[in-house]
Each structure stands twice: as structure tokens, then as C-alpha cells.
Image 1 (cartoon, rainbow, N blue to C red):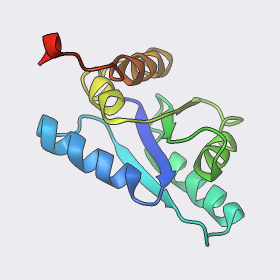
Image 2 (image 1 turned 30 degrees about the horizontal axis):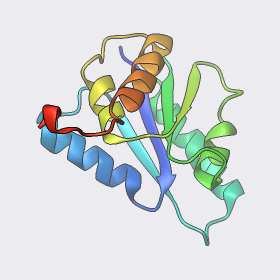
Image 3 (image 1 turned 45 degrees about the horizontal axis):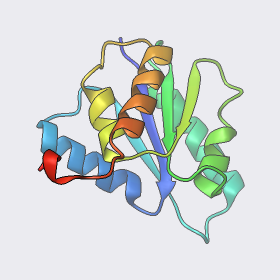
Length: 132
């Protein structure tokens, strides 16, 4: 078994990040679903859809929910899932974060959550000439 991943993001950010990660790595080693949030959608219906996706993703090892901007509607929907067992929510999803977790698919939920945070944080840097 392995941890499932749910991307809850504005518009198609999650789908595009996932497609780019798949293109970069050649495969996605974890079960992943995306939930695109648009302004005209009902938050209560989105919360119910997110719970159904969570049930689909949880194969016994839990679900890592990744969202884009903390405090915005996608993260508010993700926060509604936090009371459920075996769910961790991490805000600030970016491509380095996804690549990092896809490189460690065997990790348990809490460790994978920490890898996600480290990958996201370490992927943000001032690019200097010495790096190029």
C-alpha cells in the first residue's frame, strides 16, 4: 500500500502540476487525484466531492492533501478534511514539492508530508550565476 495524494487548487493548477511531474519523471508512483476549484462553485458541494475523492485515494496508508495558497478557497476546502483520520494537509504546492514526494512513494504519511514541505521550500531559491 501507499499514501494517496489529493491536489486541491485554484482552476487547473493541480492538473497542470501533475501533468508536468508525470512528463518530468515518466510516471507518477502514487495514486493522485485533483480537484479544481473555480469561483462559481459551491464550497459545500466541493467539500463533499473532496471527501469522496479522499475515500477513493485512501488505501489504508492515508492521504496527503496538497493545496496552493493557504487561506484561499482551495485550502479552506482542504482544511475541512483535516478532522478525518489519516489525512495531512500541506499548503503551498509547487512542482519541486511534487517531484520530491514522487521520489519517496514508500514513505508513511507523516514522513511524506515532511518531504513535501522540504521539497517545496528547497525548490525556492534566488538563482545565481554559480547555479547556472
